[in-house]
Length: 411
Image (tube, rainbow, N blue to C red; front, side, top):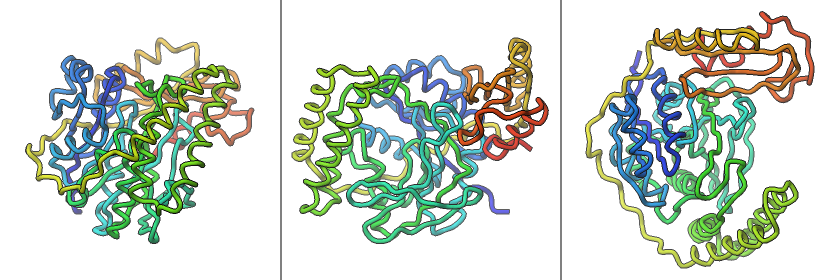
């Protein structure tokens, strides 16, 4: 059997040291061999890593500039793996994430791969397979969810890779110049996707490669996803349209984008998250950013250099077992102790704790290092299930175990 290709996992972190610690803890449980970890972090992130034993085997790169594209390019420069995968600091990968993504590159046509992203409740999908066009418009793709699909898009279209769950063949990524620093925060991967498509590169959709993304607070949004600054979104749209959209369509596309952003702000206003003055301020920033983006310098991208550092194998959990620990809501302390004891033994743990209710289920990766699913014995996990269904405890545990069997690596 052909061994899996060496994989570099690049994590960019700015202003979220607690989220970075949690992300790295989950990365330490990846069941893939070999892989290395490259962390591009600001001062707060680097300080947090200094206190984590898991960070000692990672390559840590300093970057205090507020530019995610430049930070990712620093990560690529330090990455020595044949495949380079990317995670956001406020995301956690399932244990088999890296193995599923890397396996897609066994097909020599594949230059990029992307997986599925689950949202805050740990169950509903935040994003799945999508295409994108030269106007930045996304469209859903209906694909099988139990296997890899390799796609080469039609002219003027690309396969969208999600910034917090994507991987690229390093040689191809470096030849294209990596990410364009003109995109400091937004549309950076979409720009890369269109450049990949223009080069005729194929992209693999890997549904089994799952990441959980929490949308943590940042300098541009609150923890409840209410935006605090739209300036860079406006600037990125101006850069994107200049690079990819025919000139006679740019004004219409920008008007549509502006209307969508205004509608989003008004929704937050109605829900009580914003005041009228906030809406005016944010729209003013959006417009100011767009004007700035029309003047932002666009330089040709040069190929990225070969890695400056050798491959540095990270001690993951390729040989770790996985187990489910299940119990009732009133046994939380005992279940917690059992989960911690199993972690000490080197086992990846999924704890299921159900109450005799119809509460919706929620999945989280705990700071202690185990996966936890809570909710009512009779409640929904998948959000298209019935509001109430009769289950025996054992049958519900088996059903939920089957639901997460592939991404969690359960035997």
